[in-house]
Amino acid sequence: MTTGFILIVIGALCGGSFGLPSKFVRKDTPWETLWGPFFFCATVFLPLLAGPALVKNLFGICGSLPPGQWIGPVAFGLLWGLGSMTLGLSFAFVGLSLAYAINYGVQIAFGMIVPALIFTPGVFGTPKGAVMLGGAAVCILGVVVSGKAAWLKEQGGGTGQVPRDLSKGIAVAVLSGVLCACYALAFGFGGDVMQRASAAPFANPAWRASFVVTALALWGGSFSACGYCAYKLTANKTWHTLTGPGIFPVYVIALVMALLHDGAIACFGVGCPMLGTLGVSVGYAIFMSLAIFTGTINGFLTGEWRGAAPRAVNGIRSALAMLVAGVCILAYANAM
Image 1 (cartoon, helix red, strand yellow):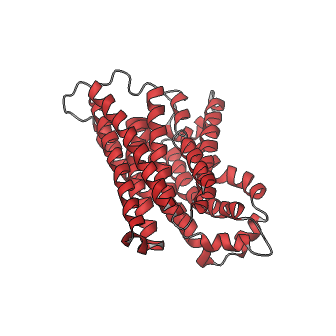
Image 2: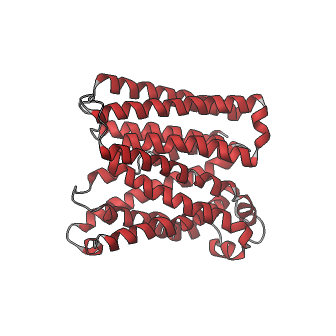
Image 3: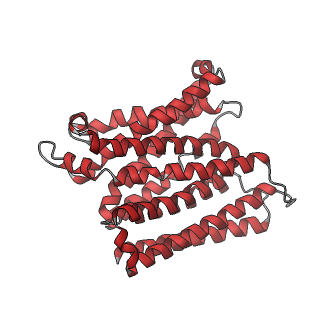
């Protein structure tokens, strides 16, 4: 269980940082010129490259699965891909701090409660379930406070006028949070896939078998995320930017983002089964809360909070403390 928790923490650090390199592309770089290569690397290239090295006979396992076993991870992976795509849009609208806070906060609610209701509904009538809900409530309160602090920061002089892109970005971030939470469901419905990967003749250990579900979810997400980027490249007539001058640094940044992104979900995929029967629900809440913490710190490091009012800065500090407290409560609930 300790190893699983450590992997969740490492994954959260990666997950809260994968958007950070996007801060270092040229300001005139079209959104789809960066995010198109990122999604291709994250959902197609890296799984095809690393999957066969991590899983014995990955493609044989996938080919042996009946539709009833693979359709859940792929379908929920497709919805997750839509969420990841809209999260990328919300970064551009409202910055790392607010986008992470809202997106991951919504994911805590959906990603913990919904899988628990589906797979272990009886837990909510127990003391363990009550502690789980209490920890989730503290995490969500921390998200609300962090969102309010980021809102105050964006208002600048405190006029009360909300910038148009901020309102639009908040709506996009909420939508992306609901859709991104489908990754937890993709993994929740992947139990049969992992059993097949672990059984003869494949005989993969459990931690390797989890990567089969990860690959299926990522490949499902490639249809939505890469498809949208292809649409944007066509609609904006920006295909030429993928081979234009100065594109090499963009590809490097996209690859680094993809490595952090896939590293996050790989650690989550391996760590969750080690947390026991509630690994998907509790592990997801811990993962998202720490990712918000990391994303907010990255927002500070890149100057998003420079010049913010003391009220906003104090608010975000209080929110981070709440998130840490919520994670501790959830970790205790999982150990009960």
